[in-house]
Image (cartoon, rainbow, N blue to C red; front, side, top):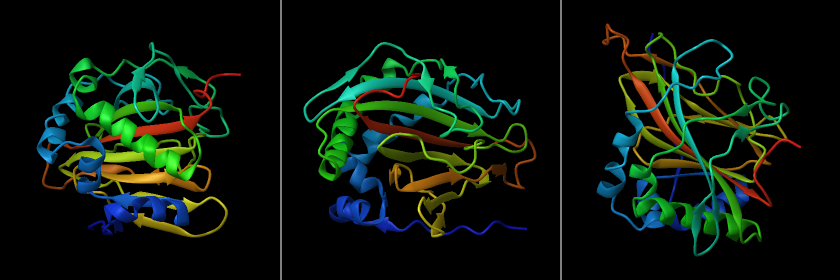
Length: 250
């Protein structure tokens, strides 16, 4: 039985800030990301290889080995993007019921990605978007590279289920998806019953979220029935923007 896919509601680049302000989320295509990073799509696509060599996430409480991950942290304002020394990723249990309360030390993101011209421009551009919505000049940003694969049959992008991240804004980029079905993105109003479902399929398309207003999740992925060895994967980049400080243990 096939899994239906719903097209994402792509917002014109000029309307992204207004849409995010009005409804708490916006989906933008690759042209918006190219504008933010001041790079052509080909330069962004050259970064995709950095998702091919990542270590297994050692903290999955369901015992799975379907998630690979790297992590880095930055302080970003209108003119600079400064990486900070390696630090643990932490979420309180109220935001992550499965892995909350743990200090998770993921392997760091590599210079082959972070030293590319597109990287600081992308973070500075997104910080400007956030500052247009909230009068904050300095943002504490965590970056997460993810690969979810189907080597064990099913891969779970969000094993913790529908959640908020405990930050101000979230940007979720689809980098690549190969030989899979599923991986549907679901966005819910945190204050009511309304929600939206769609499947990101365009490389470098992005979902932007006001984290206080929206709850989100991604459904599990499975290999295509035409792949007898079960191979397939979904690559994403998640950037979280938080005012004041990083989210650390009290």
